[in-house]
Length: 484
Image 1 (tube, rainbow, N blue to C red):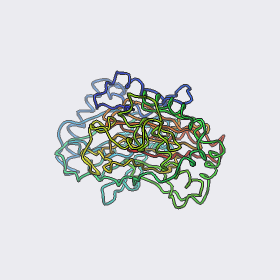
Image 2 (image 1 turned 135 degrees about the vertical axis):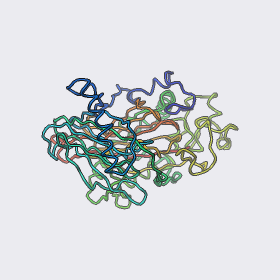
Image 3 (image 1 turned 180 degrees about the vertical axis):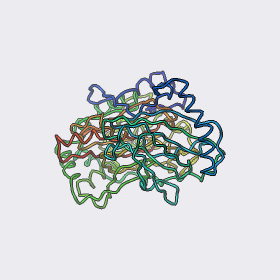
Image 4 (image 1 turned 90 degrees about the vertical axis):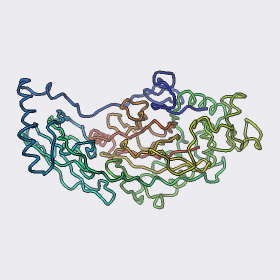
């Protein structure tokens, strides 16, 4: 069976074969060289290395903050502040950004920023944006933007509603600042709001004819499916190029340009920002493609690609020793064993999910489970443009799942623009896998409970693409998740 994309847990060695397979770009079928996505962001520098004065001056500055200024700040804010502070220096350059967050960690009470910038305009970006919040203490909209100014100090109270961001630097000026936190008695925090997840549903009854209508015939060949499954079981991910028939892909791209489609922004900003399509407003071509992604036939095809049990006709795990790499016939006939035996489950459950939770919608520590026992999926059509992103966050659900991404409108998309999907181990920054947007490509990634994902912020460089494609401000993807 397929091993999940490994995080820290489940007994997987970070240095073993599975771990090494996940570093870099996805496996590509048909084979070609993988492409790494970039890692960008503001450089955090040690204060003592940045300051142009002497060590004595730096220590004197720190002492002034900890003593005279702390006493004044405590009197102004009416908050008892401890005599120690966190302090560092940050340098933001072109396209650097710090996305929405609240600064809350144990004991932080006042955040401060001292700007050491050249003459600065709002058009340079790099503003400190402050958010209002809703009834769930979630960021709602930007209510104030502060433009950096030389030798200006900003401070604010850290609280459950102190959401803020540093907007993207849009010029080639250097945004240098000294920042940190004063500490004091912690304040009570309300329970974190858990967003309603996308609705999950079992497959809809469309037979194999829908596959022949849409999908490149090479992927419907049983030998090809067996090769893909072998590759997927080795790496837990694969990229299938030219997945749709060319004429179908072209129709799909044309339909995505339809001005009648209603797009709505999806937040909150501390978790995500992108646009999702209202399905009722979609033209028929897009509705039919969504039916394909939810169809019984595709569930079975994905089982053949991955070795996962997403359909009762898929060979069960107890048959693997008899014939690894075998696939169920997508015409509805199993090539592995008689149909009456195929619904039986191993006594110890599915080895892809070694720790079966109780059948509840939500488990502890943000683990959401498919308690129905029936394979299900959830998904949406998303539009990505400059300023869009998703973030790893504390309440992000972690579970075994098969991610499916299908990209459209990505011609001449450069990884430097962002917009790629990055997989990381929970609690770590190291990338396990990067999936870059690519036209008519289907990406499949099987992840475990210790693996998180995010879509990299789409930066100002992406606007350069308009020079070559005046009507293309971004790209689209169909993002689906399948659960055994």
